[in-house]
Length: 387
Image 1 (cartoon, rainbow, N blue to C red):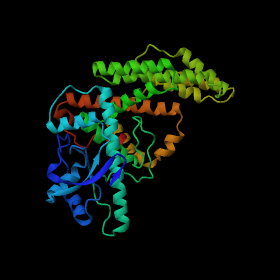
Image 2: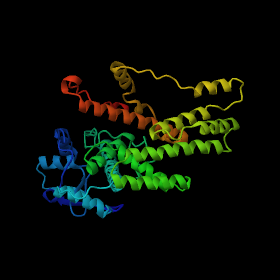
Image 3: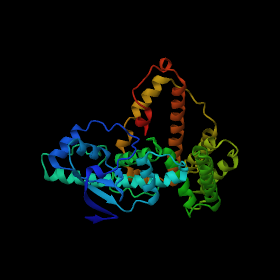
Image 4: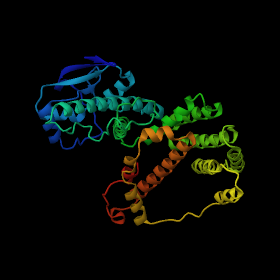
């Protein structure tokens, strides 16, 4: 069966090259084996034309455990030669010249789309079997953390077509792709590169901002670092958004005037991370001024004054994390994505970037702490609870 750049075939299990897997522990396969024995392999694994595994390591391990000789495979002929080469290098367990950040991001976007497509096909097959086989209750086929297709994600910053996959499934595809390309599950650095690429390619953005994004992408590839260059572009994007707000004739005069005043006093020489926060705060203050009430000037003055930051301890931090646990389950990503303005989206990303920077600082502190000092806590990373 042919469809969308791929063909479904029957292939010998021993002929499939698994390659080097960054994730060595595939977990308990018993439930998956039982599901496959009961209803069969609902969704083929995905391989390259030369037989290198792309998606479906757990499914392949399960059928090997069951002693199968042959397995249904989805041969994806649309995989780029560079991605096929990287996957082949993993199979040979060789180490060549490291990928640059932009190369890694391009391959990450492609592999993420493959994982998402695999999850969507698997999700569809599982639902079809559940509806027509009362004995099957959607057993663990490797995609159990995918949300229903009705929870469609907002547009992906890397440009991947992730339609048909739930919000939780998008996160899984991102983690899988990041792990395959970089060896780590954290995908935010790659998403940050994609954000800068999006700005560089945005024809609606000022040419100066696009040129800056292009220079910072080149700098990423030159020195191998991402976050400083990403912050430089985000700082410029945030100040550009403030300047556009000041010139936007569609905005009320009070908003334009307030934005212009904020822009005139904004310290452009501060570090990029601080400039992003300052510009976003200025936008928030400007967009919050929409009337000509006499007390507006007093409110503006009050909002512009710095507010002392109170520090809290570990107990309060853990309570905050507990309160945030699973917060994303209470919102519709489609509704939020469609309703956010560009300014609001920048504020969300700035908040996320600051949160990730704080989590990185926590990780660094833990690395420098001895086991006795940190109490060898193993109750999980707060990143899962926050994001």
